[in-house]
View (spheres, rainbow, N blue to C red):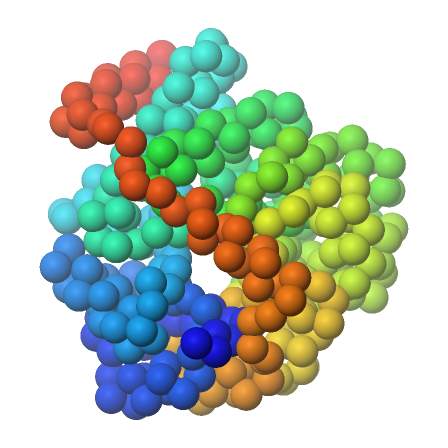
Length: 339
């Protein structure tokens, strides 16, 4: 099996004939789903299984299911979940209650995903927002202090893993200070390194053992004034792998985002050369998918070791009374809203 180092999107709720041919020839490592791929539970489960049948192995299937503004699965078929800031408010009143709620919410999200065959959630965030930052992070964050953010992020990761769903730590090494939405343009952070080490990077450091991580398309001018973290060997080597000591499989954020420049081929090669293990391409445009696939190698060496180690953490869900858990979560979050 020759798996290639990219994660692909698809155009819609079912795999087209052209996409089937592409998947067979390109052999991506994984698939990421978006709202355009979602109609109903049976349809999503069939899409996931079809993807794996085409590839011939239990390839990872990812989704961004945070709650709040970033939730690809939602009513009427799936519950709406609160944003990360709700757990931060609970934590302020009682850290134990906040952590328990974050863990339980993630466990419930993971149960929704596991029922569909989705086994990777692009969560938790360890971004630490600042007042002058772009609102793209905003209430998705778990607070504004590194210790609190790291603690809640750990609880979320634990909740996902309890249901056999792998967490993706994002956005390494921090998107909270970005003054632009990297979906649209390249943010530049001019904060000095000492401050970054004590704040932004500090929130990620206790989470370096998580199995998967995602880079930020953000320039940190005090460290590398020319390249965003995704394509910076300095940022990945010195900060993400060095100071933060992240040991898992590192994927780029979506390389079709407006923050990056150059062709998709150039972006793919630059991300991998800088130290990303896997390239993420999300928009489901077949011509772009083909360009990415033509410019990435077979998964091998250290990247393969990290990928294998991550996937080995997929485990059978622990015993769980889902109905009772949903009642407890609704009660806890209802109390948070009324406080």
